[in-house]
Amino acid sequence: MSDELRSGAVGPASAFSADDVSRRLPGAICHEGEWYVSATSVFASARKLVLKDNESFLVSDRRGDFPGGAPGEFGYYHRGTRYLSVLEARVQGDLPLVLDARTTHDHTRIVIEMTNGTVWQARGTKLAPHLLYLRRELVFEEDVLFERLSVHSFAATREPIEIELTLSVAADFADIFEVRGTLRRERGRMLAPHITTRGMVLSYHGLDGCVRTSEISIEPEATFVVDHRFVHRIRIGPEEDREIRLRVRPSEHAAGDARAGAAVVAFPTLPSRLARGRTLPALRFRTDHDGLNEILDGAVRDIAVMISTTTDGAYPYAGIPWYCAPFGRDGSITALQLLPWMPEVARGVLLFQARHQARDFDDFTDREPGKIFHELRVGEMAALREIPFIPYYGSCDSTPLFLILLHEYVRTTDDQETLRRLWPAALAAVEWMERYGDLDGDGFIEYLARSPLGLRNQAWKDSSDSVSHENGALAEPPIAPCEVQGYAYAAFLGSSELAEMLGDPDRSRAWRARAEALRARIHERYWL
Image (cartoon, rainbow, N blue to C red; front, side, top):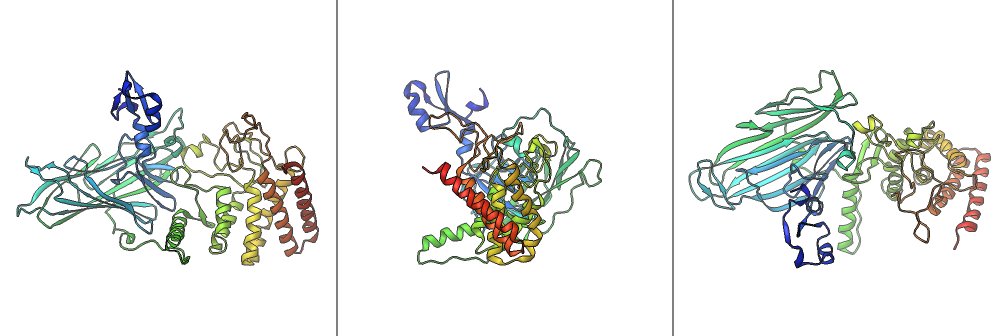
């Protein structure tokens, strides 16, 4: 039976109509007269837990596992690569039973509380269910993943019980685009692992010449290791506790670097975040509605998680798991929405976007001078130009949004120093709107992908089938979205005000006139 049919039959095909089954179980398929639930669909609908810290994030199931053989996004990722594809905890080889699973209030830890089902002890005796309490915690500290697995015994007998706790690990070092389903013609090679009872080093030599390594340390030392499984045989008396700690540290070095594939080092002190929470922005909303207060507080915590620290400052990443990266449009809009309370985010976004602003032409990445990027990725596939997001500039609105954000940031903060620093980038962005953004000279900004791997549609809804005619036929680029012309109008108008602020009245008048002319054309061509 294929992998797609392993979740088990839901009943004979004759018992249900196809419409009934597809409506109740969208992932169901019929095979030889039996209905089955697609394993992929089961995992896709399962509740997942996520955690992020700067350039790292993880996706686990409700047990805190990255289940081996499961399709989808489970794993621990760092800088666009999956550094741990399997992490499984077992009691005497069995799955523990979940009592509660959650991400903490401050989004710094995943906490799973579990108990045992009926398991067999090492001496062949049966252990009654619910005698063990297991608490599993996952936490990041500076992109390093830590796990703490605690066990408490509620056994009434005076005799210690003997059990095996197993932690299984594996790493496939898949690029996140591979995990998403992109097929590659060839990959690099896995290096021989270095395994001891104190940890293991798993390494991959990529086609880009980079060696990526997961250095795994465990404490206390395992009783033995077999097939990437750390096995701890423990004796635990009534009301006693035991604890196993795991650390996974990612690294990437050039092949031949002495640090590539380094040996396991001693286990460090557990991160302070296991005891204290994340430092959240000093931002609190208070209304006379408790439910609204909870929603707003949750939004602040979510923002704190998604903001990563770059060399230019704060940058809000777009989403976990597939979009945990800088996006031009998303970064600018998020910074605009946060501007009254967190202007430092806007400054970080502006400086980062200016540093990656296009300075030449490149068809593969849809790059043009002055253009602000759409999406920036790192990893093996990006390094090898197997994907265009290095960065990719296929967005017709990220450039005017950059100018809008700069204007609003200066209006809000009066940060003249940052304005002067970014003014060359602003001039290049305005020139892009005037020279390269208007493809046919009609005064509007259009998009047309030149990259063979680029986005067909390059406005906010950038799926390939998002723009169609009234009869349903897909619209053919070049396309000039209405909202982008509004962005361009605001960008010209705001840039005019900034030019006047900097003592450049000629540019100020020219851009204001350009804005008013564009406004008139928008009303003439788009108004219904």
